[in-house]
Image (cartoon, rainbow, N blue to C red; front, side, top):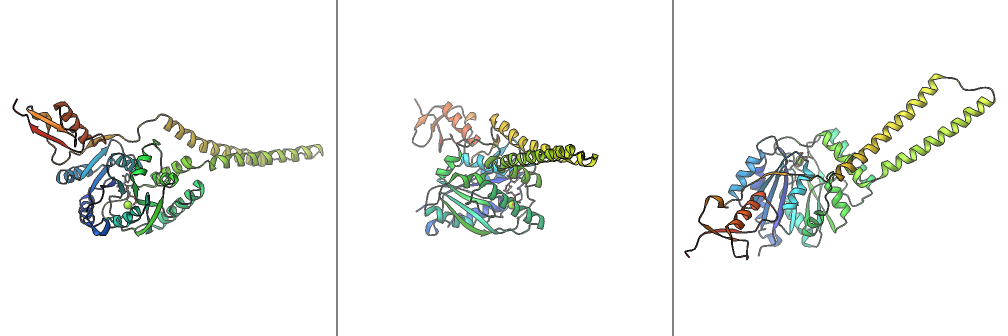
Length: 369
Ligand code: UDP
Ligand code: MG
């Protein structure tokens, strides 16, 4: 007996060299990943995060050959978190597994993520034990990133090394739809949601081909996004620092006044400059921190869409309705015969990869009157 539909969501940035191998591995693994080693019904949503290479052409080829594969290409490089959210929005499964395209998170892990889900967990984090191929700087900055994020957000359930791969129940996927934030760290948001969680540890494999799309600049932006979205600690620190500086300044003013009254006013250009520069620097720093919050508040207030889909793959086996003038159409499973216009609309929705798209469009020759 087959289980419910499982969606696999993969963000892909310049991954042309990896997707075919990942498709082959997924096909092999999902043949026996269900309960008791049964096959799993699955779909694979690949979100091309506006890659500069021919990633989307590869996805189109895979989608043309395998109806379970669907691809969307974003109009800009939005980063993997937004790409994943876009994929989840289009996922139809009872659960979705988010898997990177570079085969660092082995597809064999899916069976291990499914087990806690069957036992009732709504979010299953794949927590990496090892992460090969990283430089000493990347290891250090990664550890610092996760420690600081845990400390500043105060979310104790956040996996200590972060989670690059996870399974989400339909309840969680639907809950995420209510969050329209643009500057979001999805892993922290998931931990913040508070659903029933489980952790599964795994060994990360080396990247199969290509280079990591996560530049240092993108990582720093993600860290600031995370802090601004989940913590007011920097603002609190600013108030405390401001208050301490004011008290110290006031005490020093009293000291200077006392010395002046005793006829020994302190002299010195150097001490004055030190005070001006330290205070000026502190103020600029605080303005910068404030600016990060204000800028993000403005960005969210504009309510621009998180990501725009530039193109979608054409599903394998869908006919071109526009070319067939004499066709009658049945649209949707169980909806029965519809009009030609409805069929054209349905096929357009399917091409867009819309969640409104019907499960089935049947184009049949017009019946004799
Ligand atoms: N990715 C993306 N957009 C980006 C950068 C990365 O969609 O701007 C994808 C990438 O193709 C991969 C996943 O996010 O599927 C994880 O990225 P990567 O392997 O580059 O990160 P790392 O493993 O080095 O942390
Ligand atoms: Mg990777």
